[in-house]
Length: 107
Image (tube, rainbow, N blue to C red; front, side):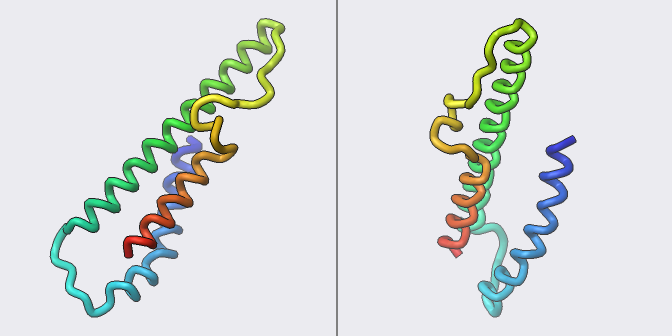
């Protein structure tokens, strides 16, 4: 449910915000089909989405493990320090920033 609430609700908003920039950037230029730039941006977006999914799955496993620890009477792990979470407290936001920067640099 959270994926649909966040993923699908934010996507139209991001498209709406990005359309003016896209039209200003490509005004007067002919765009014939799907070229190398479109392929590059598509690959970057797929890499970002898969990385975000990987980070979310790591967080889900951590939360389930902490629930199981609590039920067994063990001490909960206070902070997730493995995987992508070792490098950033918000890896999904970091990936979003990188993709945003990458696509603006290409355009």
